[in-house]
Amino acid sequence: MSVKILKPVHGIKDDGYSTVNKLGKRIADLSEGTVISSPFARPKIWGSRKRGIITGNIEPFVYKDAKALLADSPKGTSILAHSQGGQIASIASLFRGAQFDTLILLMPALRRDFTFSTTGFNKLLVVHNIFDSAIFLARFLKKFSDWGEMGRYGSDWLDHHPEKGMNIAAPYEAKGNDHSFIFENEQIDMWAQDLLERL
Image (cartoon, rainbow, N blue to C red; front, side):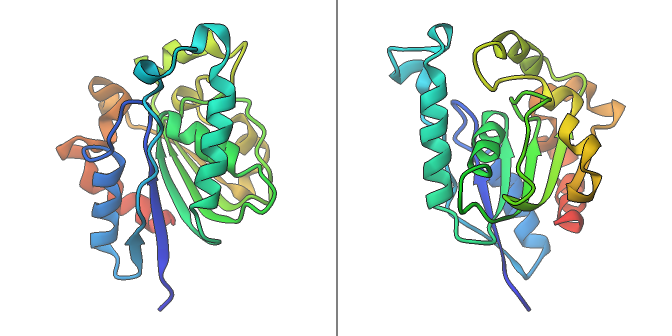
């Protein structure tokens, strides 16, 4: 049986232990053929960078992180990314040599019109939640960065490339859980099983 490597990718100020790491471990527990790779964490730029989003200087840091993620991901690695981690993983998939298996983007803080490469991955799954208030705020940053509302509405690119994956709308019941509803105890096992079947 072939082994599938699943790498969690965190968002800003997210240690992952209660979010993507937690979900990734649940997925691995359900599948003998899935192993969790060491997680990739976004630097906590809010507190550690003097230059911030208002000046537009966030972009070089995101691209630097995307290159680091690609270098840390062997060919065929699947990515489980939340929030800005979805932005990092998506940009990484554009670089020469990117050969991810499945990109799973959970409420990604990314432009909904972001143009993916058809060669950077085998499959793309975007879980989106129309009630995500954190992603709603990201729309104000899209004029000078790749931030946006894909996490609320899904990927426009997938609408034109259905053979590469699918948008997965959160059920109405997710309304109260907002940006991280998938990781809530009453949701996480259901989503772990669902995403495992789609890997």
